[in-house]
Length: 273
Image 1 (cartoon, rainbow, N blue to C red):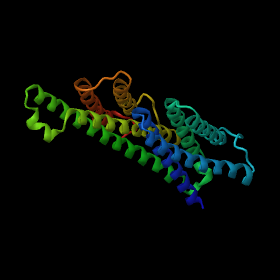
Image 2 (cartoon, rainbow, N blue to C red):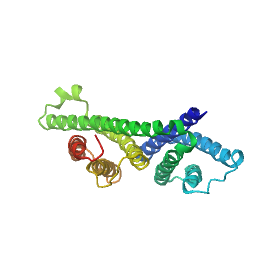
Image 3 (cartoon, rainbow, N blue to C red):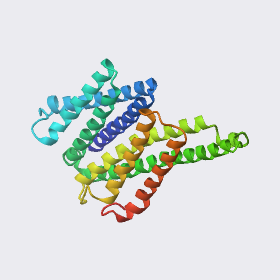
């Protein structure tokens, strides 16, 4: 039963993470299909969290407000409920996404903080799995940023050939400019929420583990900077309408910052490998 409870918490967090990615894609691309997908995933999380809440109240006889850790369960459930209501009644996708980012953080904090009591034999393993997931998601996000970098590089090469009137000869090999620009945006749109979730997992892991955590650590700052740089890329594209050569050049520069963070800042970090 202890192990099954751990798996249920892990499944809940996994579904919650996928819903965050769906809401982010909807926010960036105004994608109704992604919104519906994210809404139903979030509804599943709400059902599971409601079951957790009712179990605490009616089975254990403990209304979750006695301690700070207990109140996190109620807090995350309230945020989740509000986000579902807002999603259905109002077309405010920006606030829905950020409510759920914070709700995900609160739920993760609750699960990790209460792991020693809920599944004591598996608590250490659970915290270790958070670290593994943190690293895995960060590397996957870097993979999407690498794809975006290559597409942007191909864009600039194709742009150069078109300027030299050699574009028709190379277009079938590199793809047209609009396609390269569009798929580069899609790659970044997936990489940004994945990196954000990875950062949240890393911060929570650092606080609940025995490792000494510093906000001024080079890798921590570097990861946040990388996330901000790619978020600015999306803001420039979505809010200001920039695209084409300028944004492709920016994307290449952003990837160079990513490489510095991955190779240099990792070696300077006090607790990253």
